[in-house]
Each structure stands twice: as structure tokens, then as C-alpha cells.
Length: 284
Image (tube, rainbow, N blue to C red; front, side):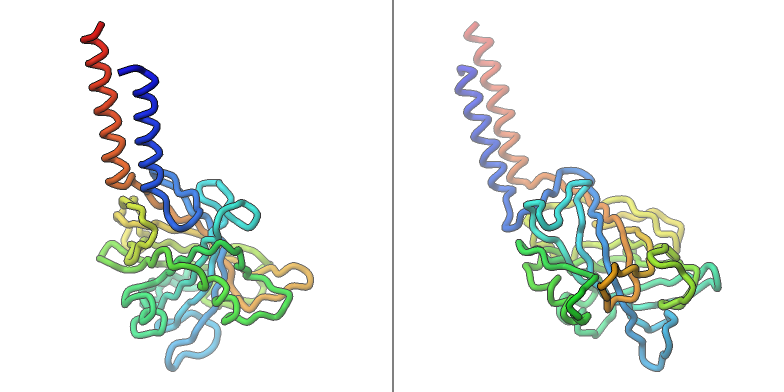
């Protein structure tokens, strides 16, 4: 086989493989391990019988987020990529520690409107949208409901939550008061980690699990998504307000693997290359 013909064959296989990997969104998910970096805001929903602003068993944290970049590639407005945003809801299962080192474990808010919508063990829902609408700061007086509507009006991409015993969500903070006075604006006063599995995957992509450290049990587990970040106090710019009293930032590790169709096409291309090489040697 001539080199030019072989090149055309391999090029065609690559194009077909690329087309098979195409999805109905425009986001730069690379092969292998990658990081989703986000900014988010959350608010407290008090559980039955609970009062005040401290975080107690039975309370719920609910919030919104947007992914700023994928392994350093910006995907915010003006980048040419779609928005990747979402909503989360998680319920306090236990509280430990004390002043200077409070700890919490969280789980699905079973029986809520959130789990009714996204699944019994759901904690996070991701949406893609060609229009970038997310905001956690606003100068036009939007409510939490308004902001949640902006991040969930796209196409559902993933739902992440608890699928087995390896899944967890935990947090540690200096104070248990979600509106603690005296903390300088935009200052980190705690951290959180979680390991979740994909309960719904509408991306058309395949993922393998990543190692994730669970500080509550001091064990390394395998999960589809491993997240960790900081709990921040809000710092609205001049003239802006926010209905979200706590802000966060975090990184989420995932590991994408090639789709079977892509692997098959690439294998066929390699087989063709091998056959062409053998034929070329015989002809020589």
C-alpha cells in the first residue's frame, strides 16, 4: 500500500473516531485525569426543630456553582465553550469536634424535592448551556431561586451522589456558625472533601474511577469524582449584593477513558498500518 493511501486511511479512521466522540455540548474534556475548578455559593436550610445559624444534624446546605476551567482551560463566557454549572444539596448526618475544629459528615437529603428530581441518592446535578448565565453576585436583586434557575435551565449532563460505601462528603471548619462574625471577607475558614459516583451520565463519555482520600475514615477509596475545596466568607464588590452567605471554591478530579467505538477504530487503524507494513516489506 502506498504511504499516501495509508495516510488517507488513518486520517479517515481518526475523523470517524472523532465524530463518534462528539457530543451535544462544547466542553474540553481531555483523556486521562483532569480537574474541574469551580466557584460556588451556598446557604443553610434549617432542619426540623433546629434554629439559628449554626450547622446541626438534620440541617441542609444547598448551593449553586459554575466550573471556571478544565485543567487550566478557561470555559467561562467569551471562551467559546459552553457553560458548565449546577446545583447541589446535602444533609448533615453527624457533627463532631468543637471550637477551632468542627467536623461534619453529609449525605443525600432523602425525600426532598432535590432527590425526587435527580434521584434518591443525588447530591450534585451538572448542566451545560451555550449561554453563560451563572452568577453568585448580582446588582439586580435576584433571589436564590432566580440564581438557581439560571444554572439549571440547560441540559442535564451528570448527576453525582452516593452509589456505594466508598462515597462520602465531609467538612471541617473553625466555627459551626455559617454566618460567623469577625471573619475577614473572602477568608477561608474551613475545608471540605467528597467522593461521589455518577448516578446519571448523559455526556456520552466513559470514566474510570480515581483515588480519593476520606479524612473521616483515613482511607483511600475509588470514586468517579473526587472533590476538595475551601469554605469562604463572601466578598461582594462595590454595588453588588449576594443572597448566598457562604462561598466556596474547589477542584474536582475525574478520569476520562476512550469510548469503545474510538478504541475499535484506532485498533483497526493500527491493524491496517501493520498489514500495510508487512505487505510493503514483501514487495521489497
